Length: 71
Image (tube, rainbow, N blue to C red):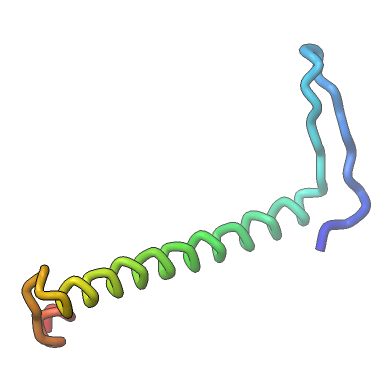
């Protein structure tokens, strides 16, 4: 959870910036990395289920589990 030590800054061009403690930044990066990994798994599963549906419809050649896992 972020602490209340957030600072808002405006640079010379008028852009608004935020400063947070490094511990909070590291925590945010770690959480973001985990969310990226989860999103990749979700995308891969969605693609796999799409392929299964195409196989069931006869639009894609069916393969065995052994072939699917390259065993």
